[in-house]
Amino acid sequence: MPEVVASELVLHRGGREALAASTFTIPNGVITAVIGPNGSGKSTLLHAIAGLLEPTAGSIHVDGCDPEDVRERISYVLQSTQVNDAIPVTVREAVLMARFSGTGWLGRLSSDDRAVVSRALERLDLTSISGRHLRELSGGQRQRAFVAQGLAQDHDLLLLDEPLTGLDAPSAQVIDDVVHEEQASGHSVILTTHDLAEAAAADHVVLVGGRVIASGPPDEVLTERNLAEAYGNGHHHGGPGPFLDDPAHLTEERHSHRSFEG
Image (cartoon, rainbow, N blue to C red):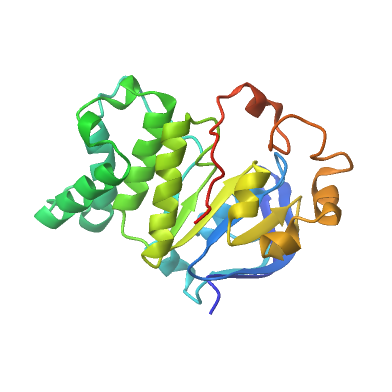
């Protein structure tokens, strides 16, 4: 059974239509890249998959689950998690927060909970700085901390909103490795990206441009015709680097590896 099934799905956000009627499936156990221009509905689609946004019309189901059960199976790492720098939260404490979803804020964490947190810190190469405050971290370190928090939450499906955008090469490589580890351990991963190389290296691609234009293997989705529909003519050739849009990416330090390759 597919991991995600959407039928004539329509989504509104901020008082406007973010995604027009779309029907598509996302298979189970693969790395799926959701790609499209700014404002095309990528993050909105992740919100709907996570059960945080009700469809305006149509339906979306995760592996046939009721909407109330979806959140228990999904871990969602947002593109930018705001941290109040006045609150002295360490890296370890931030990751520990993921375990309170099962115990409640007043619950006691078990040795198993703490072991899960330690493993997440290790996987994201954060153990040596786990006692530092989030406000002291670089952008790449902070992003790794939020991904570690996502891993520490029990999940079958990991959602990542632009996890590699603007990161230094070492941080991007660590997160890329984790994405593959998640798939190898039987979890599904859905992530948004602006990077054509990242999308092309995924197992499955969802191309969004105000609606889901195409969904399937990269070579079937990332065609000239589909990309032109999403981005307009002159959409990706002739410019520097692999980013399809968003000039802000051109000023960021880019990671040099091609992500999501096995």
